[in-house]
Length: 536
Image 1 (spheres, rainbow, N blue to C red):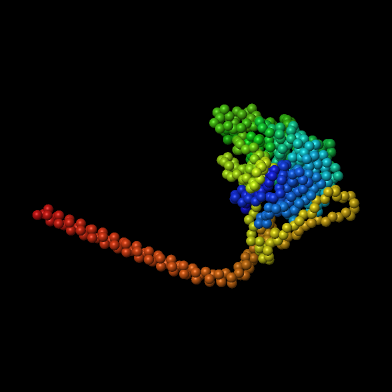
Image 2 (image 1 turned 45 degrees about the vertical axis):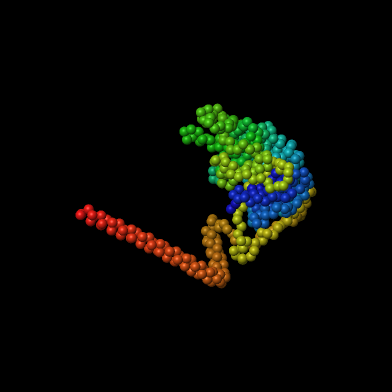
């Protein structure tokens, strides 16, 4: 398994690896807006082009990875942000094709397409008063979160975008005073694997980071229910804590276990521990929910950079008593994008110069710097998109059951995206869906919940390997017979060399023993002569 980095700048794009020096450029890739690239499954990459109503589709799947554009999807107008909603189930579907494709325009409009058919399901004009900065599907595609330059963040139901003519957000967050630049959603869960622990972190140019609790939104809002005025307070996410910084916040990265929040600014990247440690083995959960009777605005903390050599003046307990939190500075780069590695030990940062820096969080050392391989004399611009995904090592493309070659090299073209909204009011209206059914392949993950099925899978695996070993027994014997002759000849020559070396060693030892014996006899004779002289 490997972790690959997909990043774009204003003038180029590339695919690199965290643990190796492999790198390939994406041709004809010009991007000037953040969050304008999205990875679709493990095969496709959608990139919205700058100043063009066009999406470039790249094939980034393993050995079939290509630098050239695989397909171009024309659009009704220029878009700035992209997001896909995956299929709720992979049974009978192609996991490389998502369910929905969402795109936003600089004017705040949202387009929704069904990718498998290309039909335009809905268009939401004026979803935001200004340009949308980020779109993200959360909670398994049940909800969609949009952030904009109008300082608002909206949460929508996915079903409303598909079935409703006038979709309305189920929650609107307007606590920020300037543009919302980024947001992240926690992947941890509460008690009994419920969504009570789901938290939403937002960042803005007003130099604040806010944390909201989404438990009421995720658990008490039925799918397809219309928002009433009586439910407004119930569905509104609860603000838990507000962090204030001395700089405007550009990007956020959340640890997989919600242990720390990495805040990227123009003055560097900072590490905010969400479980804050105080003297006396005390640990404070900064995002812990508080009673609504105390305050409706949540807690407020001021973040202060931990300076080296200032331990006497920066005591965590005294600062915490007055509402200040110490945070470590990881890097001095002008951060535009940031992502965490799979194990959370490395932070990948895209800066304003178009370079990617891989930093070890514990030591704060830059392990490696990745630059776009381009011959252009002008600057490549700042990093606009940064994606990290796991890449598994492909096998020899031979399926275990039938021994046929894999069909992963076959490229499936996506349907063109329509410009007119699909009319679903007409009775009996049908549309075609493009789908590619895969050949039956070996299931690598055994269903542990069904022990009998697990045993059957183990038997199938054993029978496959036994069949393969019997099938290739003749070729193995032939190769073995040829190699045995070569092995015997090489062994004989090596034995002769060893015998000759041993003979030489024995001869040298014999000569040395003779010299030593002669010296001993000479000394013995001289000693006897001296004793005779002394006696006389």
